[in-house]
Image (cartoon, rainbow, N blue to C red):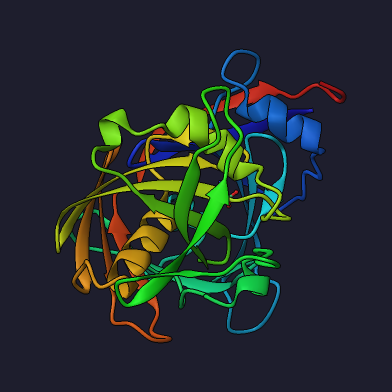
Length: 291
Ligand SMILES: N[C@H](CCC[C@H](N)C(=O)O)C(=O)O
């Protein structure tokens, strides 16, 4: 099957965008994996599908597949690129759109300075909703909130890692580190991602507090490995830092791929994320029926 695609990136988190507003492609997980493959396909962290609105009051449906081919609930950097794509392709004439995802409706808005702000909805702390299995564990008080101690089994020993656990529609486990550049992202990331306490796996954040309104972050993403930036990961890290009493309500998040700005007023207020959304190139490709 020959398809057209648009390659985009938001703070270095990169995407293959597929326009399915006129025709569903009905790709298989293996075909999503093939598209995301950096040697045999186009190459991306996630594949984003733009589909027609499923209901009144919503402009589009936004379907997200990780590089491993699995469909997921939310993608923050992808939401910004989604908004840029539908505007630049003429699918909408509005700068703000309402978009249905697996985890609910989000509202990206194109700003005059070229960045995009997304209302990502409120964070979720209910552990079964993350989902996180806390059976037999006791939380450890930390600042104004709590952390959970995960036992990891690595070749270099069995570290206990204290993580803050929450959902931005997708699951996140956030740990604080002294320096993201030396943090054990590549060794602990996959162990946290597949930890048995996370039945749907989890995105593993490594958060360095620089100041009360400035942090550095690396994320080992569920289904994609370490990415240059993770939008929902930045939201989750800032929300955790605010609840732990270490961050103010507006925080600049320096990722390896660029700067994201996260704002959260606390409680059940929505989280706002602002950052870049860039079209890299457009192309066509022949997808194998069975890659
Ligand atoms: N890997 C994530 C999906 C993509 C999230 C990330 N790319 C973002 O910008 O939020 C998950 O499995 O939940």
